[in-house]
Image (cartoon, rainbow, N blue to C red; front, side):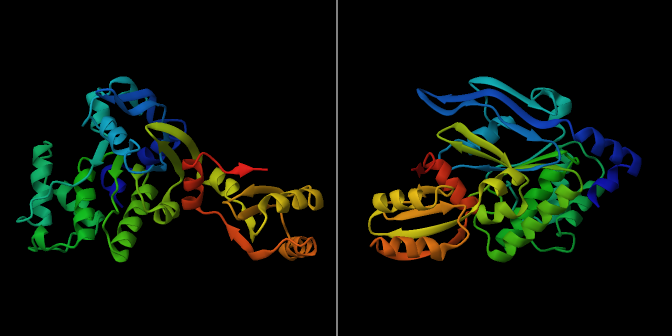
Length: 323
């Protein structure tokens, strides 16, 4: 694997041990102003080394601005950034960083290898083997003389990741790497990210495709209007995304009162003006029967499981109404 090309086994095991207690990315009150508007406000982010951190937010929430500040493409108005417990300005820590922000800046009339060799030389990597290694890792070693302009979108994204891997960085920052990809391209990039994570790399990525993100991320950060709403691990998210029983009724307030009286251990929330979510229900038929016996019309009902997308939308709306 990629890491084993450059590190011996003993050294790699030592790195794995040290990684457990280190944050690859840590910000304190990070702020970016554009005139009077704050694109990022007092952001305190913690990305543990060895994790896949999914950075989530709506368009304009401040995701790309934050990632650009982390990799030096934008200068903070205030606050602090530390990578691997060192200031982001430290040249030694900057060499541990690989970046794919927006487009990869590929030369369309060159092959994948020519693109990789050119960037490697610009980075001062005299040995062309480093270019061959990253192409092998990203599954592009056999593209031969095929020019990049003839690549699929998925191949171009993988080449962008390959260029970010030059120099064997410990931290990868990827901004919307699966945007515009077809299902096969998404699967290929997901598998690549998982392989890199298994080799010990820390990966910080943003994505709007939350279903895909939930398949690979170990931690999440949710940003809204430039402010961090929540940081949560996969395990914590699974605990919060509980199964629930949802009913659509004619009289929501009356249904709430009846449910609280008949099922005091059940937690109820209003999903919208006509729907109620019930947590802790084991037998949905009992709830339906009770409401119908009390002349409350039930239009639909069923058990559901909240996924990452639903949880994200809930947090963006500031949480649901509990009664």
